[in-house]
Image (cartoon, rainbow, N blue to C red; front, top):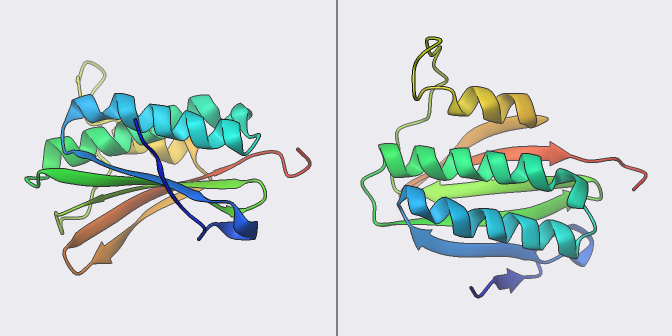
Length: 140
């Protein structure tokens, strides 16, 4: 996998981003991207939460978007913060559901909310960006 980098991150930390097929199987590449970025930034303590967040965001895009591609970006807006973005071509905002105890789906955004300091959706002219902000130890 190639990782495209840009120097738009905080304090000259490069963003890591990749365009992937809009499919549930892309979660594996997205997790690899998250782990690569966090290892490069010395924030490995966020790797498990980051992997779960990106998995859920990719799964939501794959399930609810008709587009062929998604864009996953990992950025570092501040020293101990990591932002995970998934951009897709749907303008429909994701909604948290209250899944029943035996439901096989419907818990993804609840999990994202539990693992992140904040999460949200930014409308774009061609779709939306769904993001989650992870916060690590500011002294690390």
